[in-house]
Every structure is written in structure tokens, then in C-alpha cells.
Length: 345
Ligand code: CP3
Image (cartoon, rainbow, N blue to C red; front, side):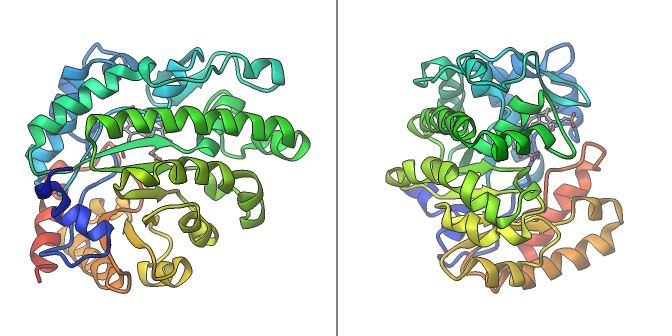
């Protein structure tokens, strides 16, 4: 990492160092809220667009140009490495990832091959191109965590109850751990490819881990997420770990090996810091729906998030989950400006 990146407000906040202002970026900042994104994606499938470095570069840069955010996040999807591992899947508009033949038996597991990283060389190419264009703005790489990936593979698509996922976890723990071990290896290879190509931080998305109790999370999930996060410790870049509905899991998610714990909008950041402990910075957590409530409400709520974030050793401002597709992009631009001005030290 160059010294400019190492000294960027985003990287410094992740490390709990002092910053000129609270850094801000948004999960899903590159996406459907932007007209320029909708235009460039016309007629191009989601997975195909993730495999074209020129397109990935342009889409990743769009929100940086528009909003003046403190970090870019690579445009991709959590199922990209799963497809590269041999699983037949598609990303269906309005639904999300759909797996043609779900993985439910030991024989099915054969269809999820280990990867070395060469299978996702297009991601490395995009990151190198982006690192050149972004200059002193850090680029965040990311991957889905083993549990969230497993839920798509076992259910075959999105789920509300995670019934089959939990049934495998409880009834066939050996198969479960074999599947999550395979997934943690694939995730590590995917993240290492991004790190070798020059990302300044990574975020591990365990978006759906909030479906679990703390006891089950610790037994069935934490060791596999820890294998990923711990396996990247030598890279020396900040590791962010995020999930939705994880109030009871925040402490355990920090223990899994994150430097920064991402918090959804349900838990105030000062309370989150009490749960996570003083060794970790936090990221979050304005409710994405607040952006539909008008400027005064946005500013009031953003001020509250900034105040509660002061309880942590470091705070990266974000939403409590991704930008909703119907969000007015100008409201996001104004929010970045408000966070920068209000948090000036
Ligand atoms: O948001 C957009 O419009 C961008 C394009 C897009 C992405 N994924 C990019 C992405 C689309 C349409 C998808 C499909 C998809 N994949 C969905 C949404 C279904 C829909 O139509 O609403 C979902 C839920 C997935 C699976 C997925 N991808 C998960 C659970 C996550 C983790 C983050 C989260 O939202 O909980 C991803 C990561 C992801 N997909 C990112 C991007 C650009 C990276 C992270 C980010 O920018 O925050």
C-alpha cells in the first residue's frame, strides 16, 4: 500500500488512528441507485459484467466521482468465486443468486471445486486497473463469508428461514464442516487475488449470519470465518466483517479476526462498542430507509450516528446495509458532504 493510502482517513479510522474527518462510503454505492450504472449495464448480465475488467473499473469509479466517498468498493458479487469453482448459477434480476442444482449431499460437494485464484484472474486485472485510476482513494475488496455462501448453495437461492441450511448444520455436521471448509478455501483464494492486485482493505460479508443463535454461530460458523480472516492477517490491511441482524453476534464476529466490525441499523454504535470491546473499530450504521425521509431527518440521524460512533476507537460511517435501488443519488452526495463537515476535527 502506498503511504498516501496508508494515511487515508478510511485506513486510519479502520486502525483506530486519529483522522481529519470521519470517513464515509456506502455498501452498494455502485449499483442501481445511479442512472449512469443502469445505462452502462443495459443488456449485460450481472455475472458477465463482473468478468469484464473495463466495466468493473468504470462501475466502481462511478460513485467515487459522484459522491466524493472516502473509499471505493470493487464491483462484483459474492457468488463470483462460487461460479468460478464450477457451480452452475445465475444472478436473476430482482431475486438474486439462483443455483441450478443445490448442494445437499457429500456427492454434490464434488461440484464445488477448490480454486487457486487463476480462475478469478479477471478480478485481479480489474483491481490493478482500479488501483492505478483511484490514486489516493482506497479500494475495498470483498467476499461472501462461508455461512452466507453456503446458504445460497444449500437453499438454491434466497431464503427467509434457512430451513435446509440449518437442517444440514444440525443433522449432518461432518458434511456441513466439509462444505464450509471448502468455501473458506475458495474465499481465501478470491480475497488473496484481490490483495495481491492491490486492494487497501477487505470486507467479509456474512450478510445472513443473523439467522443464527450465538451458540450455533460459535460452533458452526465462527471457525470457518476465522480461517478466512486469520489467513489474511499477514497481509497487514484492515479486515472488516459485516452481517445483518447480528446484535447477539457482534462480539463473536470481532473475535473471528476482524479489525472493524460492521453494524446494521438496529444496534446503536455506542452499544455495539460495548458488545465488541475496545480492540475493534466499527462501521455503520444509518438506516438506508432514512434517506427517503427528507434532508432534515437524514442530518439529524447522521449526527446521532456520528455521536454514537465516538464511543469506538475508530468509526467508518456507512449505512446499516446496502443502498436501496430507489435512493435519490443526490441525497447520498449531500450525506457525504454532511458527514465530512460535521465530523471535521
Ligand atoms: O446493487 C446493485 O444494483 C448492483 C448490482 C448487483 C449486485 N448483486 C452487486 C453486488 C445485483 C443486482 C446483485 C444481485 C444480488 N446478489 C442480490 C440482489 C438481488 C436484488 O435484485 O435485489 C443479492 C442479495 C446478492 C447476493 C449478495 N451479493 C449478497 C448477500 C452480498 C453481500 C452484501 C449484502 O447486500 O448483504 C452481495 C455483494 C454485492 N453484490 C456487492 C455488489 C456491488 C458488494 C458489496 C457492496 O457494494 O456493498
